[in-house]
Every structure is written in C-alpha cells, then in structure tokens.
Length: 165
Image (cartoon, rainbow, N blue to C red):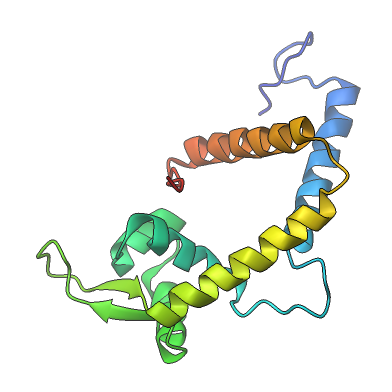
C-alpha cells in the first residue's frame, strides 16, 4: 500500500517519484557502505553491530538485555552473543542495575569508550574529506534530511533513537 499521492490517486505513484524512490533505496545501500573511513589504510576497531550498540549505551547509559531487545528489535539470544563477544574484547562490562532493578546491565568500559571515540573520529575525518567541496548549507541540509528520514523510520517502527545532547 502506497500513500504517496503528489497529484495522483492514493496508491498511485508518479513515475518521477517512483524513480526517486529507487534512487533513495540504492543510494541508501551505498551510504552504509561508504560510512567506512575514506582512507583505506585506516581501519575501524569496532564491528558495525558493536559500534551501534555501544553508541546507544553511550547516549542512554547502562542497558539490560531486555532494554536492548526492545530498542533494537533483536531477540535476547542474539544480544547475549553480541554482548558476550564485546565483553571478551573488554568493550563493555556487566554491572548491577544502578536503579536497583534485578536485571544486570551493561556499560562501556574505559577501553570501549576510547575505541568508540576513536572510530567516531575516523568516521568524522572521512566525512570531512568527502564533504570538503560542499557548502555549509548543503552539509546542514544533508544532516537535516537524514535526521528527518531516520525519525520517520523510528516513528513507523515505534522505536525512537535517542540523540546525543
């Protein structure tokens, strides 16, 4: 069911819009691929899943498996495997719930926080290199539109992603 109706009947999509939707899908696929460092000699230290999970913990604070499951729509067994691997690498540690709950939570270790910062810095350097020829207005517009797109996805899924302050 399609609700896009720029001058067309509901469910009918203008050819230009259909073409744009295909372009968005394709460019979105490439965007994930291009978010690696621009320099092939620079290697990220964290796997994408660890980077994402650790970024969420950094923003929200310690999280339990059930909280992660709700946030990421992943089953507990998947998250148990991911957190166990991250604990073995010294990226996160299990702690008692700071709010006194029964479930144990996970927080970043100092080493994990450092690697997260290093990887984020590498990504930021790559983005600065890629966007060097763009105007400030274009960079701001891209950030605004990506935020708008992500917020629409989060709203549709009912799982808003907290933003850094």
